[in-house]
Image 1 (cartoon, rainbow, N blue to C red):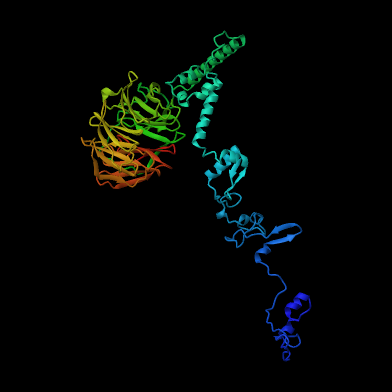
Image 2 (image 1 turned 135 degrees about the horizontal axis):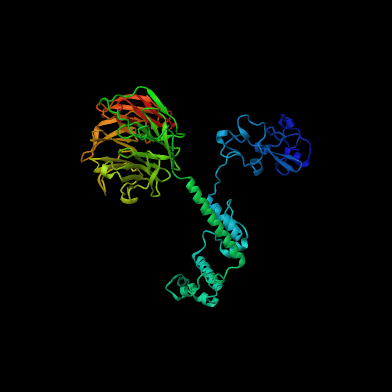
Length: 601
């Protein structure tokens, strides 16, 4: 019996027997059929079979699933691996992470890889526009395209009926039909046109004001019938309410008047007496105050500190010609005047502004001064009594105020405003007599030159403009690509040069001659003023240029050599203003945003 027969008959067969050598018996033949027949004993088959394992061959990927009862449990995937060698199921991909928590990576994801509080979120393959289109289509028509294939999901009957349109690709004929239906419904609702007429009417005629259809449609005002019943008399309840309302309104106006009166301009005198035994006013200059010599020196030490302002000090001005009083403008809305020669105390406080004071300026004799504040008001004060003579405002913030230096024009006020204009007032009449409107940014400085016949202005538009006084036409326009804004300008004592504080940390010198040229040979640098409107000034003899800076220092340069002569650490924070005493050759006053005014000798 051969091997195949043994398998077929279910008999036992030893593989070793098949591999053993067969017995050496000669074959027998029958002459009847002339064929060769073999018997198991005489001629067995010789087979060579490979060894077989009774265990079935199992794919490694199948180990991911183990069956426990009827529920399939998935082998967890490593969330850090970038490639999976088989197709995992949804449950495998979204199964929670197994194993102990990583001490430095929450949920097994490093902190740098997280872009969401629950882990790392990647953009889906579908674009937002496509998603919104299918989302809105599904909620409007009941069907949407399946993103995983080319078929649709939802109401297939409605899909066939509408021709698989979405909310964003409605055919043109469908859009036109809907517009016509909407117009028809609107006309039928107004009752102006019957349904049949509306169907026959052209939509373009309804939208055209020149057609009869438009006139019929709009002949009745939307407000028709709203006035019915209004013309009648008021009821008792309405009259009572109206009387109460009028009474409350009157009380409110009275209270407002009281509050305004409470915020009126006022002044407080801090000295011993306003007049001495000879009847002289406290603002009268000492008779012996004269310049000892014309040679100025840079200060070396601090002699006095005035600290009366509760916030930063934005500007200081010495009393004209004598310097026995010092006027200061504070960000605490107050203006104070200090004694310089004798007691060194505050003599008077002027209160009238509701916001920080930006700029101050004395008249020629010092008996009056101007203040400009962020409350959009300009006030003209009497120095001695503290009374406000007049108030000016255009509704814009004044950044700089100046009086015409001519003795016969002390009633002319110029103010650079935040609305790019320079406004000129006649203070006797209170009227605006001129407006200089050429700048492209807020005006920062006004400086009179050429015997007060002209004045130079600088602005946030990074330009200088020269004007004839009283004529609103620019006679010289200076603007270069390298120029920066110049928030402070000072006139040299000889009146031939202008020093302009440039916000690129340098002081530039311009001539006051006809051409107003930049003097390229003179340039003062070394200080840091970018972003701050630090004041620049000259010594009375013109030998020194000085300026504060953003780090609280006061810098002194030699006018001839342009070299740094000295620096003084004056304030904590910004040193915004500096003034050289008009008579004392070596004394300088500085002010800063730390609220202090310091006097140096």
